[in-house]
Length: 197
Length: 197
Image (cartoon, rainbow over all chains, first blue to last red; front, side, top):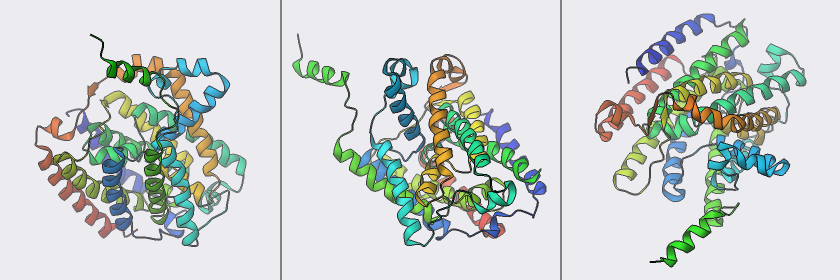
C-alpha cells in the first residue's frame, strides 16, 4: 500500500495544475450536455452490475471484445500463428457473453440516441473541428493511433474504464483503483497539451 | 479405477465450442442493450463530454462512474455476503496496472472514446468511433503478439495476486464498503457543489 500513496498524491497535485492551464477558448460546456442526470445513469449502471453478476456471473466489461475481434481476424489469416500467441492460448477467440454484450451496447446506444433525437450522423465532433479543423484524415490518424495505445494499455492493465473503472473498483480491487487513477492521470496529461498548447 | 464421468468431462473441455450457450448470450444481449442505452442517455457517447472530463471542464464521466461504483459496490457486497454471486477479481500487478493504465489514459485523450463508450458513439452515429475501434482491434493484436514476452517480464513486476482494499488495509470488507460509500458520496456532493456539470 505504501507504493499507492505517492501516486495518489501526484494525481491530486495534477488537478489544480491542469485547471490553471485551462483556456476558455474551447470549453466542453459550450456543447450539449447529457440527456439524463449522471446520478440516474450511474445508479442504473450500478444496478445493472448486480444483475450481470447474479444472472450471468459476469462483471461488465468492454475491452476484451476488441481482443476477440483481433483473434478472429488473426485466425482467418493464420490460425497456427494466432493459436501460438500466449494471450490467445489463455483467451481463445469466442463468441461469448462479452462479445455479444458489446455488440448490444452499440444497439443500445442507437436506441437511446434515436428515441432522444440525438442521432448525430457525423464524422467529426464539433469540439474536435473547433480545435483541429475539418480534416477527417487527421481525425482518423489520431483516433487509430489512440486506439492502438489504448487497447495495448487495457490489455496490459487488465481492463478498461468499464472492467476496471466500474466493475473492478466496486469489488474493491486494488488493481482496479490503481488502474483507474492512472487512466485519468494519463488522459489529463495528454488532453491538456492537446487542446491548450 | 477409471472415472467415466471425469473422462467425458475432460475430453469435452479440450475443444471448447467457439460459440457460448444461447442462454448465456441472451443475457449478454439484454444487459448490453441496457448498458449502451444508459451510457448514451448519460451523454458519455459524446466526444466533447469525454474530452471535457479529461480537460476538467465537464465532470459527467466521474459523476456517473462514482455513482455506479457506490450503488454497485453495496449490492455486490450484500449479494456476495449471502453467497448469491461470485466475485471476479483481476490480479494486482503493480507495473502492468500502472504502465497499462497510463497508456490507456493517453490513448483515451487521443481517441476521445473508451472501449465501451466508443461502441455507444458508433450506435449514436458518431462515425469517427469506427477509426478508434479499428485502432482498438489493432492494439489488442499488438498486445497479443507481445504477450509471451510481457508475461515473462513487466507482468511479473510487483505481482501481488488477487488483492482487495480490505486485504491490503486489514479491515473487514463490510467496513471498507461503508467507508468508501460515505467517502465517495461526499466527493459527489462536493463535485456537484463546485462543478454543476
